[in-house]
Length: 338
Image (tube, rainbow, N blue to C red; front, side, top):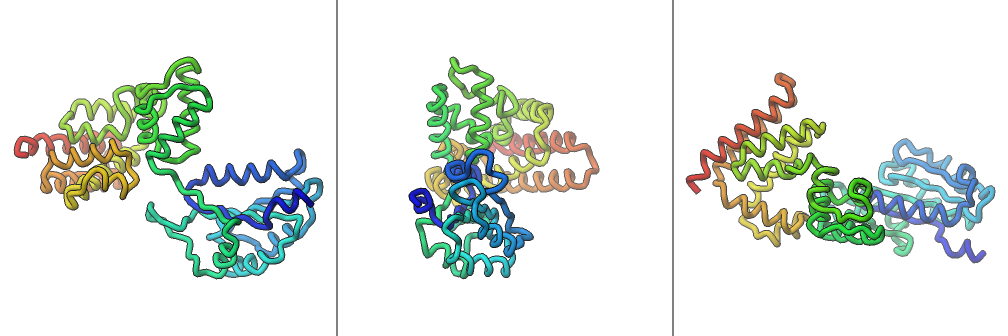
């Protein structure tokens, strides 16, 4: 009974950090399911198309060879209203020998435009009645993601500079699973006895030493057309998706336009949009180089490029070369005025 009382009858893990969330689930499974009995005592269900009656029947079956049965329901928020109703009624009668783990990609706070958990719904009122059974896993901020990279490298006794860690986060994003995957690749590339540097990140996780897809719009705004076209060529050689390249250019100019319109500081920008301080400072600095008209014209060129890319009238690489060249001409032709 000691082990049984240690675990709650249900857990609800939610939020955008899928990697850490599932790592928590894996830890729970490993701690209660006997080796060799996963197939018998651990069951996984998906919210979309869920047969709630089957889930309940499974949860009510005693474990075959483990102290506890674990039933995982992923994406609870995608279950049908009828399924949610059945699960809500079952929460209070989960057997002592079963732990029901539910997950959701939604969080309480929405900072990325995704839908939030509606705590007014009956299922969530029931779940959150025991707050100790519920835990939110939010994607880290860029600053905390950099800290995670540094700490993880320390656990491996690998030296990585803060600049390189920040560049890795800027290159691949804040997803913890992706960051750890890329860090492992970097360790294999540099070797355990060498420090990981920014150039290593560019070579292993980006397009090469001359930069990554995140550097492309900055080169364009700096008026370095030759450098931008050389980087674009490298990105295409390394099979960077054309849609990703276009998205980064579009996203950068949309951010420039927003900074120009609102005239906000780099500190406010970093806090409000979860950007690294260096990235925010770069955007603010770049916005001061260009006029409203120039940024507007650049966005018009980006939208034209987006239309051409979707129409398949020209080869994708030609569309991007044309776009980068046009943006460079627009910027260098206007820079002398500002």
